[in-house]
Length: 106
Image (cartoon, one colour):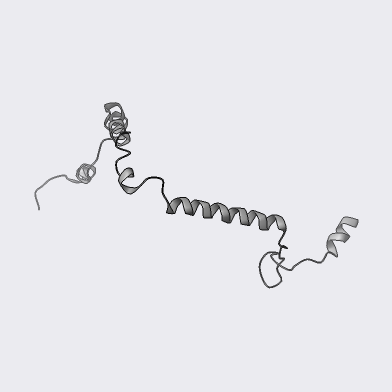
């Protein structure tokens, strides 16, 4: 009963507590300011690294060719074992073959 009375006379914000005209606004704390500052510093560091890349355009133009990743990927999909697992290609003519009874027009 006493808990019910406490909740009944408790003054709260009408409606949704974080939206609207009479919303509940959280006070800004030192911890939240420090967290936001660290996040901005981290984003600035990432943007700096993106503005100044490690490799030049000439150095990065052919570095992946030596790894032969593209050739390995193509070889994986052209393998006969992989092809046997896939369904064969079907054309529209093959799908609608049952509709073709006779060729002559009446």
